[in-house]
Image 1 (cartoon, rainbow, N blue to C red):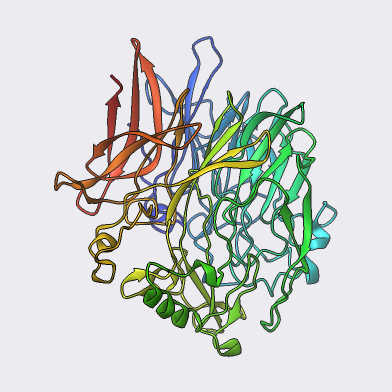
Image 2: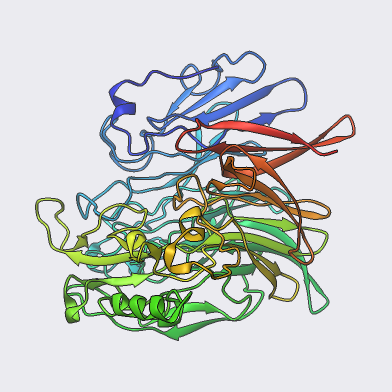
Amino acid sequence: MHRLDEGRRAQASARRLSGRGVGYWTDGKGDERIFYVTIGYQLVGLDAKTGRPLEDFGVHGVVDLKKDDDQELDPIEGEVAWNGAPVVAKNVVIVGAAHRAGAVPRSRKNAKGYIRGFDVRSGKRIWIFHTIPLPGELGNDTWLDGSWEYTGNTGVWTQMTVDEELGIAYLPVEIPTGDYFGGHRPGQNLFGESLVAVDLQTGRRIWHYQFVHHPIWDYDIPCAPILVDIAVDGRKIKAVAQPTKQGFVFVFDRQTGEPVWPIEERPVEKGGVPTEWYSPTQPFPTKPPPFERQGFLADYVIDFTPELKAEGLKTLSRYKIGPVYTPPIARDQGGNAGLLYIPNGANWPGGSFDPDTGMLYVYSHTLLRVLSLVNDPKRSDMNYINSGGGDDGGGGGGALSVQGLPLVKPPWGRITAIDLNKGEIVWRIAHGETPDSVKNHPALKGLTIPRTGRPGGAGGSSGGIGTLVTKTLVISGEGGVFTTPTGQRGAMLRAYDKHTGAEVGAVYMPGAQTGSPMTFMLKGKQYVLLSVSSSTLPGEIIAYKLP
């Protein structure tokens, strides 16, 4: 066990949670190293065999990540941290950057989320990539009115991916300051909400693609890019697939950045929030189709009965709705209570790729968010912030209901199988048992309700849950608890035929799955491990052995 007592530095951290794992490196000759990032944003190198800090790495095994970052950062209050695991590839340790949730930024000015590579032996900085380009760098002209100078965020809060053979690191960059209002940063804002491919050894940009121009929907890239070898129309392609929050999967040649299928720039609605800047178009991949609902349309409203649907449509009439990229609105703009939309497709667990078949499996869940922008000088110096605050349903969207039932019709959680050789959806199933509150609802008495699926992550958080693909199965646990047929409260770990989506088995779990399942073989037996928890069950890891 190893930890640093960082005192106030940890207490003031923008990310006061432990990281999502560690990095490992060996030279194959006995030198084995473990790397992790602390709550206070320091990179620690340990001897993998003893847990002792590496004296030859940084300063007694520690690299202060708030130093040597091409910007001035207060060692205590500087708002940059990271929950991710260091990515170790060849001789480089790559570290990302994250900030506080950006729905209500304290200021239009913030720390920048630059990405850096460090030498695996010495801890010396090898390279830095400026996610907000400096003058003279590509993309600086997409930050109008000098907004590059004070705007922050634009880090990588999720995991990164490396192709060691090609020597390329793939950086899924998030949104700039702030999540829903960009009037203080006019322009397209490279490299916000972009996938950037950089040279592993130098950090030099090789190619990039921006998924959202001038981001104002909190569609930051939530998960690691997935390296996939596919065959499209008989042509073998080393590709990279990027699931996104808006429910798209963008697929590129991972060496050149060329889209595998055309991506069209289509006109989108221009909003009317004063001082905001709007991009006239946004990118739409022609393949694969979206794996989750997008925006919010009247057709999404609950329809178990005509009466529930009518009541849902009445509730819906209070809000502005529209297709994906319908712009946020100010409070009471047009007489609406806010923009209602679905903010989550994929999230940090990402997807599972099957190299045998070229299939990608993605879990997603249907959350709601309401954006209602206000001017509030007591909370922020920005012209507008979201009145709802946080990033877990924002502004009451998650609470919108019809007689206690969700406003949006099921399925509320799903697994989608996507053939990346063809760019087609093969199957889609509801994942997660129908909640007790729905099964037992008086308005649904006498009705046969198919399995609804449910939001993933213990408590229905926005993080979601992950899938595991094997030679024959797709395996995933449920993200919420219910009353099982035996009367126990818990959830199920379910296995599906990976070709058809048909359920082939399920076993009981005492709590909801959090994160993603893992598997390994030991002495001819296969094991499946996953983390579970609930409101009454502290987090724990459970191992199941296949017969």
